[in-house]
Image (cartoon, rainbow, N blue to C red; front, side):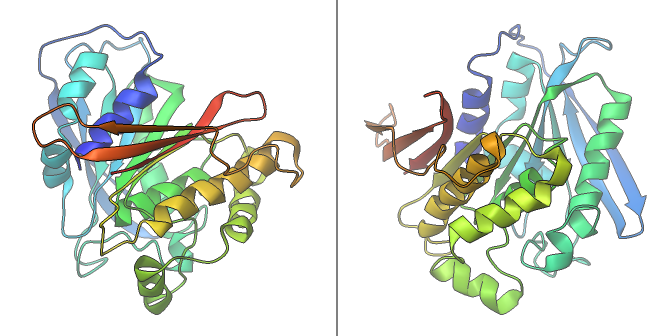
Length: 290
């Protein structure tokens, strides 16, 4: 889960936020709509000041987790204090899924204005109504089932989210029931070019370029790393349609730069960082295999 800490660092690398060593505070909330209710926790950084918009990171936990678990595992809140951004952690109750997984594999939870995507979007809207948020710097991050839902949020609410981060996730609509979900996890999902166009269609009139960063363990036996590659391929196709409305490979999943490295600490793991550029030659997507 420390991957998500790095995701946030990368998304904020080129933003000049003031450093702050003090600790922020937790606030809690809930939303209710026709699809049910969801509780959430939000971390408000110590340097937050009303009227000064800050970035916001949606944090979607994995199965058998809750907001506290995810916050502790990612250790991202100290980073929020340092770079002055809000983190928001929706909670998936066991009443919605026996393992507290986000139901990313059911069509009613893969669609705008429906199910869990709407509940999550309403949470972000509520936080934005209570705090000063920079609308151009709202990002969605997730792990495992939360990563799959993060991919969905980018495709269904591009008017809210400016970028997607996924750790051990799957492409948009990788499954449409419990059986196909397991097949996707253990092997891979449908053709990512097809899913990429479906994701573009899901964006509707809100379509905009969607920077994407993926992390995946090469030895992951629960969600195979082929799924990490498919997320990149899917969003390459989505972004290809977004930039000019045509499937002409102006954005593609062919690597523009590959970097091999080792985490700089004793026993640090090796990684492969792959960068994919947009039509102007600027980085748009990244894949980190560890």
